[in-house]
Length: 67
Image 1 (cartoon, helix red, strand yellow):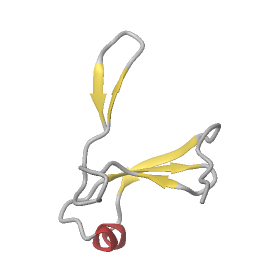
Image 2 (spheres, one colour):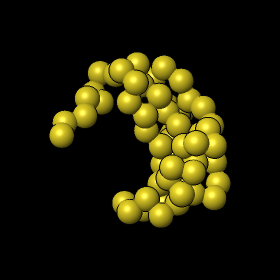
Image 3 (cartoon, helix red, strand yellow):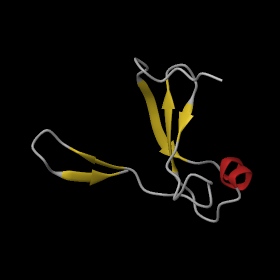
Image 4 (spheres, helix red, strand yellow):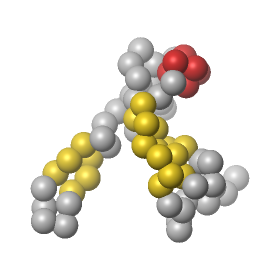
């Protein structure tokens, strides 16, 4: 299955709903990145989805931030 990500704009960044948290079987809420085509991205602590994780980035000036 191919998922279109390239060229998609971020429509929203929000905290997960209770239903999303329960569906993933995670204890903590997590950040959800919603793309304009409706696909959602969120950080996991590993490839198996054993829990929520953190998403880090860097600004053009080199400052680190987290979502």
